[in-house]
Image (tube, rainbow, N blue to C red):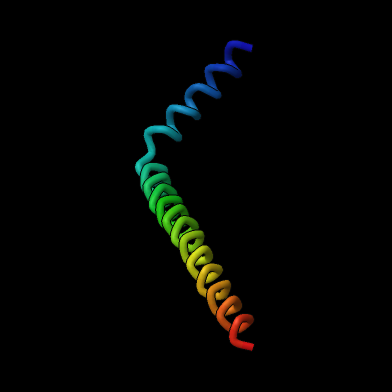
Amino acid sequence: MYSVLLKLYVKLQNLLSRKEGQDLVEYALIVALIAFGAITGMGYLAKGLNNAFSTISTTLAHNV
């Protein structure tokens, strides 16, 4: 049991010390930040479009 845990510990240390993994984490953080910004921006855009179409609908309903 001890040797299995030791092997697992060594493999974990090797994974954590690799620089390629750091690059991958940095890219993942950048993608997450861009996705968060896009989702937030789309929410504001959707609200703006909804308000614009509601205004157009109300204006058309009163002029008909």
